[in-house]
Image (tube, rainbow over all chains, first blue to last red; front, side):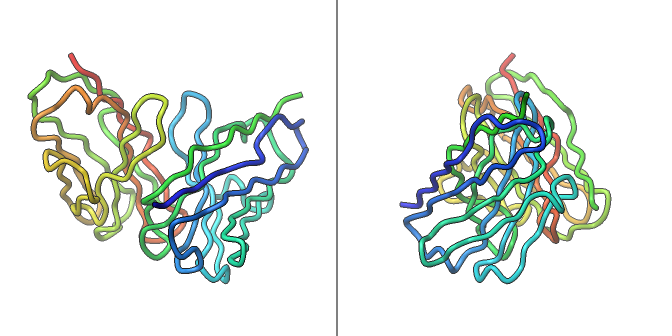
Length: 119
Length: 107
């Protein structure tokens, strides 16, 4: 059974940093691209970033490019999202998700971790 | 970047009704289109990928069609458990943008 479990969310001041982690199990982690999707309170889904299985290719939404860095440790089946220079508009539930094919759609999602950016 | 626009933004229908949600891409995306269902307070669930392929376990009353820039999600006979917000997502090339969502309620 595929399981994804995010951690690392919390309250951070504007301009601060946070690192999210996602522990994966139930599949061969290194064979699949992974991604992050966020959802601001009461709003829709926003694609944030994705990384190939080998970690050789990364992709970012314009809204986070230059501030967020996606990475993975295939030896520990863990996905990361380093978030720097956080803004109030980054406040959201951040979901870790497994890509079904290539760097495309997501077939499994974690429960999400809440990031709140506020002074 | 390619924008994804869903219509309507919200929809109210009766149990047993045929429901259609549309998704339009600002540029052609071939058939690289997925649909998700997010029930209130729950995690999104993949319903359909490659425009028309049902994910395992998804009821057959759900179907998808389209190509290029115009796509539809159809529920052939609406059930009470289908109350949710539905999102389309393009994935031909990153950024793999989502539509803004369509909130479906029972009349």
